Length: 172
Image (cartoon, rainbow, N blue to C red; front, side, top):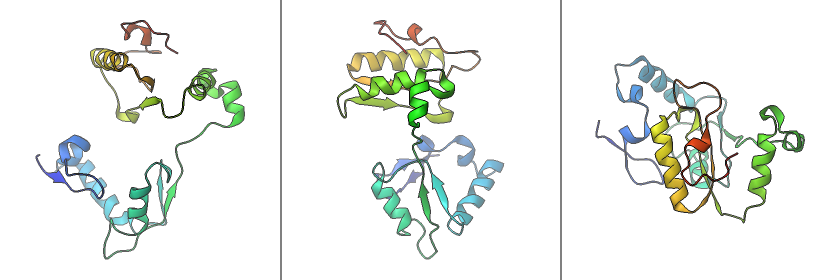
C-alpha cells in the first residue's frame, strides 16, 4: 500500500511505514475494530496517552483544540506518561532487582541532553542479527545511549547484551 498519510505537524508518511500490517488490510478484523474505536474515540469520556506536554506540545494542542476531528467534539486528553519511578523504587530497584536504580543513577550522572534513548515499545521484537547490527551502529555513533532491549523471539531468559557489542563496553 503506497498511501501517504497526512498527519498534522509532520511531512506525509507512507502508511506501510507506521501502521501495523492488519490495519493496512480492510478485510482484517483488526482493521474493523481499529476503525470502530477511532470513530467513537472523540465522543469518549477521555483519552489516556503515554506522553507529557513538554514532549509533544504541538500534538497535544492539536488534539485538545479539536483539530484532529473537525465538526465533532474532542474528548479530553489525559497525558499520564512516561511513568516515573518513585523515590522508594529508585532506592530499592523495585521489581527489577536493582537494575532500575543502577540505570537511573547512571542516567543522572550524564551531562544534560547527552543521552540517546532507544526503545521500540512492546512490538519491538528483533532477531539476534538485527540487534547486533543496531548495537554496532550505536557503538560506532560514539553517543551515550540508553537502550531498551527485548529478548529476540524464541529465546528464553535475559538477553546477553554483551554478546551484541563489539567493543565490549560495560553493559548493565
